[in-house]
Image (tube, rainbow, N blue to C red; front, top):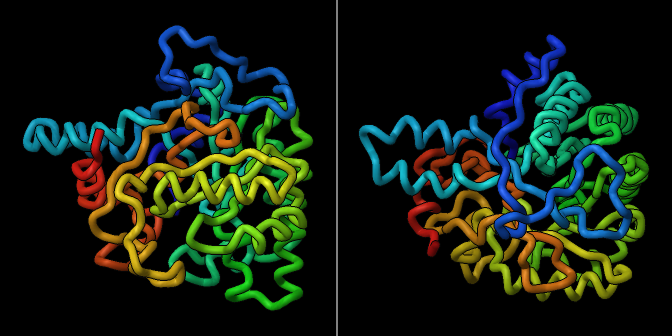
Length: 345
């Protein structure tokens, strides 16, 4: 569930006190001549954090590298992969970075230096993914607190959007006892309080998706985790649910948590999720066949409660060792090509 493609060289440069030039950006609204929000000044709390933002296009993404490699010998496939390479996606931050403050600082500075808005997924809770394909995370509550402190220090006063802990709240009742559930909620709340105290950081808590936990059950979990302090919640991270279903669920959940806004991961939901399967059925969420890229990232969602559609899970990265896929987070060119060719845009 993570993206590491361009970070090794960036972190090495940062360690040498060299921040590389920023990558290309495109207006989040798609409007030519859109004004550009400052990425180095405090943001107005309560305002859509994506307002006047510019998306960052990673020049060293896996999709970009694959398109460049294929261009001479597989030109049609390279053109298809360009659908992914030409769009922004979030960066995943977890325990695979031994120096999290440096990794975050490098990423945030590189993006904001170009006038773009950094979007990050924080994914490091203890007992992550219930020991599944993306198992791992911090070794203790204290370790998680220290890790979040490092993230906060790395962001500093610059602008950033953070999505907290995919599956953390929706999945917790599956594998954690009552005490560990309480510990998990408290850890997410610690992250919320630490990050929302920063002048430029917007925070969304992951809330699963429309075919998973009922809104009435998810709302109290969000409230306990500090949803009132945040910009809202995130839906469909690393999943395939159709956008209309997610908008309906988002509105229902918003009404239960004080009218909070939300964002939707549209990276891989162009054909929706496989039908007739429950949320725990691996065939519904782990590298299912026949999926397609969804709506490219945009602030034009058609719903005032939905701040943005964004590719939170980079399309083409595996969900895990299932349906012939590689390890979770690994780049899978064949799956990327399938989704790109199935896209209806």
